[in-house]
Amino acid sequence: MPSSMARLLLLLPTTTYRTQAFVDAASKLGVDLVCASERPSTLEERAPDNLITVDFADPDGAVETVARFARRRPIDAVVAVDDLTTVVAAAIATRLGLRQNPVAAASAARNKHEMRRRLEAAGVAAPRFRQVALSEDPARVARLVEYPCVLKPLALSASRGVIRADDPDGFVAAFRRIAALLARDDVGLHGEVREALLVEAFIPGREFALEGLLMAGGLQTLALFDKPDPLDGPFFEETIYVTPSRLPAETQTRIAEATLRACAALGLTEGPVHAELRVNDAGPWVIEVAARSIGGLCSRTLRFGTGMTLEELILRHALGWKIDSFDREQRAAGVMMIPIPRAGRLVAVRGKDAAEAVPGVEEIAITAHLGQELVPLPEGWQYLGFIFARSDAPEEVEQALRRAHARLAFDIA
Ligand code: ADP
Image 1: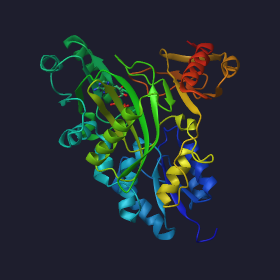
Image 2: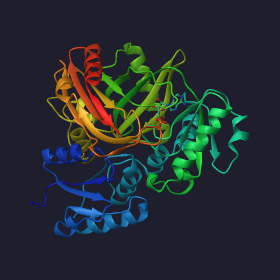
Image 3: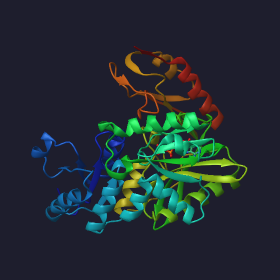
C-alpha cells in the first residue's frame, strides 16, 4: 500500500445499520480503511492494520488505543457512523489533531438535558423542560408539570422511550415505563444519564428533518425531509420521510436558520448533523440536533452531484477533500421505516414482490430476520425494514410508499 494513501478511521458500534454504507463509501474513495468496534474480533489478529477493538463506553481508553495505533500508522480522518460513537470520535480527533467537533459539543448533543440548557441559553425556540431524577416520587412530580408533556430518556435515540403524557396518571405510567427501560442491561447507558429523565412541554405541529453538513461552523443543508404522518404520541414512531420538502421556501429557510443557531449553541462545527424540528404558527421549534447523519438505511434516498452518496460526502469532508456539488438530484425521493406493529417472533414476510411492483418503488429492504424477537416502541429501537421510492413529485413518492406498505404483511407469533 503506498504510504501516501489517506487513512480513515471509522467508529462502528455493533448495533448500527450504517456500517455497509460507510464501508462502501470508503472503498469507492480508495482510502485505507481502519475500523474500530467493540467486539474483540478474531479477524483483528489477521488484519491488525485495519481493525482495532475499543470500548466506546471508555473514551479515554479508546483514545489511548487509537493513539498507539496511529503512531505506527498515521490516521488522516475519524468518522463516527452513529450516535454511540460521536463523543469518542471527537476525543480521538482532538488527540490526533483531526477535523471534528469539540468533545464538549459532541457530548452536549448526546445529552438531551444539556442540549435543552444550551438551546435555552442561546434563545433557540425549543420546549420548556425539566430533568427529573428517577429516585423522585413520580406522583409528586406529576402534580407540578404542565400537560400535555413528553417524557424521555436523556441519551437514547430512534424515539426509544419517548412517551407523551396527557395527565398525572399518564405521567406516572410513562415515568415507570422509562425507569424500567433504563434499568435494563441491554440499554447500554452508564452513569447519570441512567438515573434521570427529561420532561418537556409537548410542541404541537408538523415535523421535519434536516440533513446537513457543518463546515467550519457553517451549515450546508443537504436535504430537508417532510414527515407526512402525524407524530402526536403517545409514542413517536418514525415512518415516512420525503424530500424535497413541500414547505414554502421561506419556512424552509427558517428551519435551516434555527438548525444553524442550534448547532452554534451546542458548539458543533464540523461534520454531519441530523436535526428534527416541529413547525407551528409560532415558527420552527428545535426538537433535537444529533451530530451524525440520518439513521437506519434512510441515506439510500440521497444522491448528490453526479451520483455521490451521503457517506462519500461525509468522508470527503472529514478527509478535507474537495466536494464538487452539494446539490441533491432533482427527483423526489423518500423512505418508509417499517414500524414493528406488535411484540412477537417474526414468522413470515409476505407481499414483497407485489410491494416492489408499485410504480415508483425502488427497493424494499427487510432488515428483520425470520425468527427475530420483535420489540415495538417505546422499548424497541429497530424497524422491520425500509421501503424506498423515487418519482417526479413528493406526493407521488409518499403515495408509492403507502401503497407498497399496504401490500406487505408480516406474520408475528
Ligand atoms: P430520539 O433522539 O430518541 O429520536 P427525540 O427527543 O428526538 O428522541 O424525540 C423523538 C420524537 O418524539 C421526535 O421526533 C418527536 O416526534 C417527538 N417529540 C420529542 N419531544 C417532543 C416534544 N417536546 N414535543 C412534541 N414532540 C416531541
